[in-house]
Length: 130
Image (cartoon, rainbow, N blue to C red):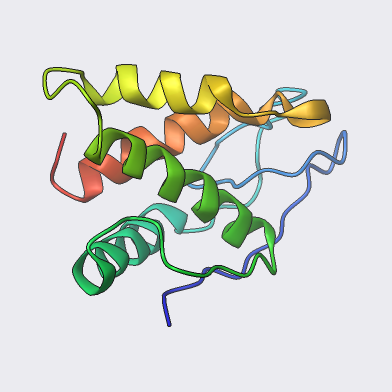
């Protein structure tokens, strides 16, 4: 068992999926100003914290993606685990983040790369690690 964040959101302008994690976060695809905010960062931090405390890893042993929020969490789990297990202890969080996210296949959602990067940095700060 782990902590899921069930959330769905699409840009009213272009229809792109994204998480407006704070007031005014624009769509990462078209730049349209957001009109909705969802308090995703503390919930994502709680999920990551739970996984690490319960499983000794940011990656839970099993994960079901049932929403955009869960999909984003899965990306965060992988990125944070890549940093936790980095081969070079001197590697920065940002470097490990770029290494992991840059190696992922984004397909037609490449616009999400920077968005997930921004969320990851905020989650790290929420965890008190940055």
